[in-house]
Length: 93
Length: 158
Image 1 (cartoon, rainbow over the protein chains, first blue to last red):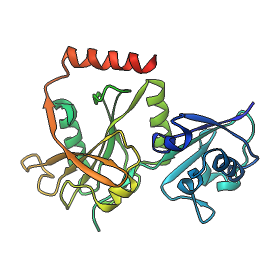
Image 2: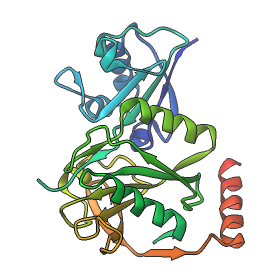
Image 3: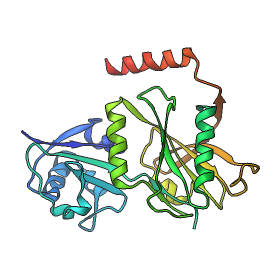
Image 4: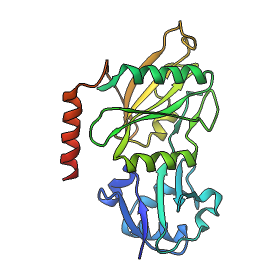
């Protein structure tokens, strides 16, 4: 059994249009490294300076990893990872 | 062009007025491929700010899960500007993450109360490029439009 990674519309150009791809790794950080091998360019859209980008949300089994240890959050076969861009914006400052 | 029914447009404007002077935000979901906004979903602005909006990350996950379960997508993503015009800011453009959505901007600058005017405008935001589009307000979606949407959806499934 693999780890299912759900890809948002805006990142599907990296996955050949696939809505979900298989992932491997023991932590989110390792999973992202493997995603980068399989789908080059995707890592930079998710991570900046070794932390998850401010306006990207990554969930492991419905938990936002910001509350579970960030990129060190453990993952295992059978887990579902969901990636969602924040829906955010604001007026001109 | 964005086609939207009057009741949904009114609901977006009412939400923007209610949350003024903070920015209001939400989504109108519709069947995948239909381009018809049918399910109005006001969201809480987790930033509770007059100059910024952001969906709570837990609410965001729940929303996308619901849309997935219903074979829906975010046809409209809306938010209000409360002291400036209804035009996407640099931040709006940088953070726009739904290339298929109609981004609706509402300005309550002059119309926070019933009597005042509220600008209601729609844009496509793709790869940092903003394109304003016409807004067609209809009393309801015609059977033809809904049938066309359904047949598009069926084709998409095959």
